[in-house]
Image (cartoon, rainbow, N blue to C red; front, side):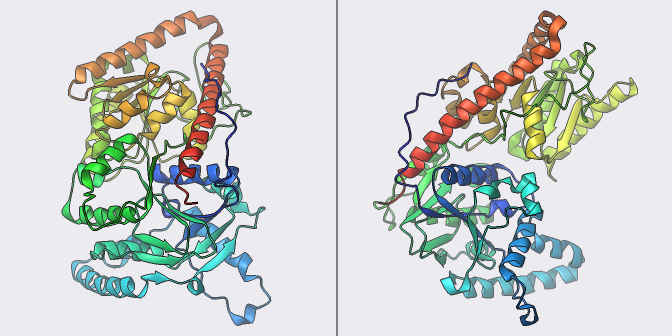
Length: 511
C-alpha cells in the first residue's frame, strides 16, 4: 500500500541559494557502494532544492602546453576529470602490485613510500585558494553524461580540484597527525564531508561531517586501522554532525569522551535517514527484461531467473555480512528443490567469508549440473544500478544476515518497495523496522538460531507456491501488478524520506 503524502510544503529558505562543497572521495573509487550512494542522494536532494553543489576532488590535471594556448583548457580539463570519475582510481596499489612483487624490491618500495608519505603530509597540509582549480560542469552534451555511473553529475554545478587531498589526509591519519588537512573554501557557504575525513575547511559558515557507523572500532578491530579511523572520528568534534541512524549516534556517544579539551558546545547534530538508493523511473517498463515470459514460466533474462522465483542478497562480501550463514540456511531449507533460487549481488572479495561461500555455492551447483539442472545459486558480481533495480523489483524477497550495520541500505530499499525481507535482528535493522509500516515487511531473526532462518525461508517458498496456484491463469498480469505496486510505493516513500532528509540537514546550517 502506498503511503499518503501528508508533508506540508517545505520551507527551503535556509538552504536555497547556498553554495555547498561536498566530498567526492567515495565517488572516485572503482566500485560505488554504500557511502557513494549516500553522496549521490545528498547531491540530488540539495540540488533539487535550490543549492549550488560543487564536488571536492583530488583530481588535478597537468598544465597545458603554451603551444596549445588557443585550445580551451577548461574544456580539456573537464574531459579528463570525467574520465577520472568514470574509471575510478587506485594507482598506489596498482604500482605496488605490478612493479614491486619481489621481496627486496617491495622493501625498497615501502621505505621509499614511507619517506615520500611523510614529505607529502607536511607539504600538502594546507590548500590555499591559489592552489585549487575550479572547473564548471558545463559539458551537458558530454558522452560521459550517458554513463549510469555518472548520472549524478546532472546535479553538480562544478568541481574543486585539490591535488591528492584525500591521499594526503589519509597519510596524515596513518602517521598519527591529529591536525587535519585544511582547505580554504572562501566564497562557499558550507562544506559537507560524506564520511569521517581528516579535512577541515576554513572561511565557510557551515562545516558538517557525516558518520555512518563505528564498525572499524566494533567489529574485527585492529590497532592500526582503528587508530586511523579514530583520528578521522575526532575531527568530527569540530563540525556539525550527520548521523545516518540513531544506532550510530548512540554508539558515537559511547565512544567519544565529551569531557576532553574539545569544545563541543558550538556544534549541533542531526539524525538523517538516508534517501533510498534504487533509481526507479515511474514511466519505465521494468518487465522488458522478461519479454518471452509464458505460462510455462520461462525467461530469456541473462541469469535465467523467473520473476518472483528467487531471493536476493545485496552486499559486497566481507565477514560481517555473514553470507556463508545464509547459504547454509538456504541449502538446509531445501527451497532450491522448489525452484526458488538465491541471487547474490555483490563482489566476492579475497577473504575467508568469500572463500567459504564460494565453496558452498560450487558444491550445491555442481550437484544440480550433474542432474542436468541449472545453477540454484547465482552470483552476479558488481552490477550497475539499472540491473540491480530490475533484480529488486522482480524478486520474491530480500535476505540480509549481517552481524552489524550502521543503517542497512538493502533493508531500507526493500522496506520502501514493500518487499518481504528476512534480516538479522541487529540494532540498525530493528531501527528500520520501527519506521512507518516497515515492520509489516521485515522478518527479524536471531542469528543464534539458524533453524528460525530455515523455517522463515520455507514459509516464504510456501507462500510463493500458494500465490502461484491462485494466479496461474493470469500469472503475467499479476507480476506486472506487483511490480507497479512496488514502484508506486517506493517513489512515495522516497519523496517522504527526501523531504525529511532536507529538513534534518537544514537544521545543521549555521545562520
